[in-house]
Image (cartoon, rainbow, N blue to C red; front, side, top):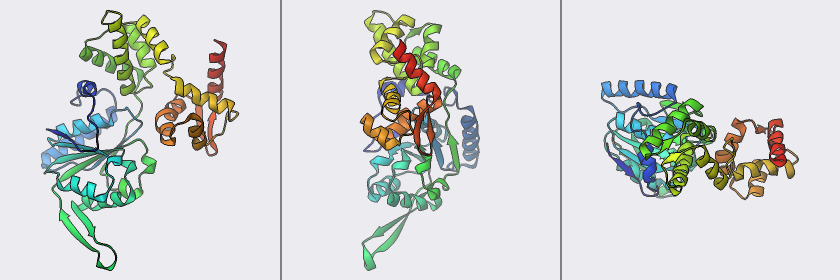
Length: 330
């Protein structure tokens, strides 16, 4: 299996490739998803045909891209990678599709950010492996059809609610990736530490898991920064003292909340009286995009019960108010 990054998609950092599991055996967690994918892949391999198109959804950092890599490896297909924002015109998608070879896996990240016209081109490509292109405009416009080689689309999104019904219905398999358990995160941290040549204490692993926001990406990111602190201290050991120093630098608390998380909570309380507040108003007060609030900060704050989503907007919970009071009383 080879991998191609289609223009418009940045190369992944070397450390992400290093830590990325290359098979189901190394992929920790998400057991129901793995079990179903194994069956789909084994059955398709026995029939010697491409697997059904797959839609993966869930919060950022849960392993959707990694699963796309594993699917391509298990299906013995070349992986072609792009993203919704990188496909700006129908011609961009047409060029990608016509360059796919038999059995290729096309991975589109952030598929919810495809515009409507591009999405419609995908319909026939997914259903009948034909590319329908409209040439010209007005009465002289005509449609040509191009046959495509068998391929599988693996799409990932953090906002499945933004996908149209017609597009969702064309995926033969849809899987939701959930937050990881603390035990799974601990196992991921130990695996990553071993790959990075970092020694860890059991206490440090437990603390890292607690602040990981239940996501492998965050756990690995903090582990990398802890390794930096340990190296500056002249050791390869990440222990509790190392993490205490790191958290002071990164302004991370014991629940994994960072500066921007706390700022959202303070804005909700001080500017909006605890809420409700619309996500647009929050984004404006925070100086962030709405999509960043909804995709990066809000899910975890809801997960740990500090805010809640209501029909009228976002509100602080009693737990959220108590959290802020404890901060101010320290």
